[in-house]
Length: 412
Image (cartoon, rainbow, N blue to C red; front, side):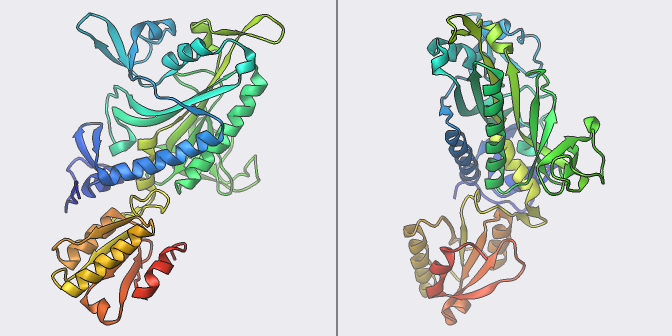
């Protein structure tokens, strides 16, 4: 395994995700706000991004991959070259100015403009999963607030507000589904668009006590409001379902914006309409911080021993640990079980190190895979393995010939 667990966390690890992701060998901090994703962490990130990809494809969006290096002229067109304080700016050897993309409206709008001329080709939605750069004054909280990070951003183009509203609502529901598949509970919070737009926008807040934002949220449905702009009160009834409203904390993991004609005006992007004249297009923008989502999941699912990954995004499903690894019979049986799992397509991390049982158990809890299976001389005497879910304090003995059948069912 490339990337090792460590017994202690880095000194400045102020959040659970910063502590456990580095201590567990998921990421390595290069500098403040910049991380290398190690094999374990990359497995999680890829699983999350695949879930996102599947739900965006289901919306009918088409995947593209846009450059991070963006010309200054595009940002001047939108009057954001001087207006976005988190924009990294570069000057080349030829004295040309560029931006490192913190967002891609300045690229996607002229891109789509090259290919779309008629209302008959609309609506259209394109998305990418890419690396973004933001010149944060204080990168903090592990992968939650970085200077370099991963994001899925989608942009939709429409001829009328009704069409944009319809897609916006479908995208909102797709986002709720993405987060649900990742195992987290989100609230949909109406928000201001900030530097991106002054139109309607929504944030998706992952509910966790470690959250940065305070919300008034429904205990039953996805309704929520930021405390500072709330029109509802704690203890009141949810305006959407009648459920009880409570004060809680959240981490923003996604947002969606109605951009109106802000960017199509800047690029003078119009198409021919059914009446034979030209009209400006309306745009929507939809973002999910995929690397930030990794951190939010850890903040939500951990205990004092380490991470507790939801099964859908765990880097592996099974942590197979062999004790007394110098015992040929034990190792032979462990390798047979490992091979069976691989053949069956069950993702398994095989701990065959020459380490103590205590170290292996500690690492298993830290890494946090859904199920730990231990094979040792003691378990082999009983023709079985020790089976323990990461969510449970208790373990049980499972017969060797029953392990594979048990793994093909939901973990209980």
